[in-house]
Image (cartoon, rainbow, N blue to C red):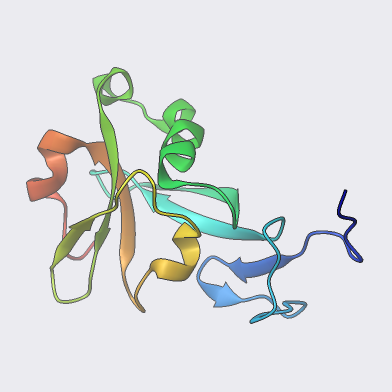
Amino acid sequence: MLSLSRHSQIVLDCGVYAPTSTAPHCLPIDTCRQVFRHPDASTFVLTVRMDKRVADVIEMCRPHIRSSASQEMLVLTEVKSNGERLVLAPNDISLPTMLTLNGKLFVSAREEVDHLLKEE
């Protein structure tokens, strides 16, 4: 059995390195506070562990979805500053570290991806 020599720490706080961050020496138990957006551009923040898959993060987001989309197939989509949309694969890991600078992360039904806003 492995034992850890420290407690989990916040590595990224809403896209910015936390002052107490140990990055780039992160452990799977470390967390990131991540901003998620609805298609209507409203936001919510969740604390996500570094070892969580995108599919796990989508399940964490379900209680925050206000529309009928909560019963549908949800996807996480990064909308980059140039307007490019990237639907993240369900098996991707360490979601907060994959995002581009100025990229926005949307949780929506698959049918809504083409209608996500470039800018708020």
